[in-house]
Image (cartoon, rainbow, N blue to C red; front, side, top):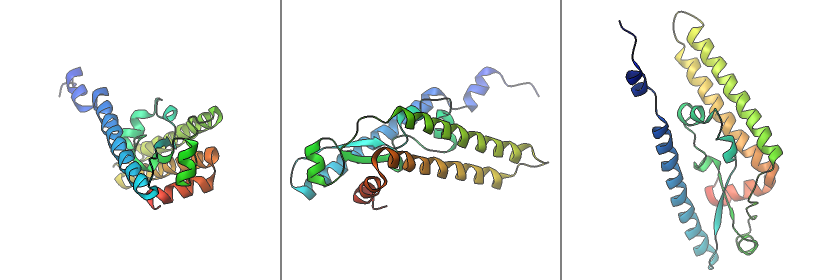
Length: 182
């Protein structure tokens, strides 16, 4: 059988355009979610308030060599509900809604630490993939799925940890409970 040419390989692998389409869809869904949450907050508080999404796993952690792995393999995007914490846009909004104000930035130390943890999580998952794929005569699909699930759950847990460090665990829990009941 002849080796596949570049055109065939390109057809098999998701393109940068596909990746961007996934990100664009997720961003659009976040806009809709934030509009809905803001509308509900206005109705609840009887005054005009504004929410701003805080990405618990910061955007800087997504703009790395692991972006494709996070999005395609783990089916995570930075703007999905699991990674979003709706926060007050202004001090007045914070007072009205009883939630903290968006800090606008995440500390560089938290970003670097998070990147390191993402690197470790992905490396562990890839090592598990390799063992499941090349460890015997057959591919251990259960081990592949387990590795994927563990990595997914670790990324979600990492996001909550970063937010707790940056904003305080009580503030994170209160905002998540207020908007997502979790």
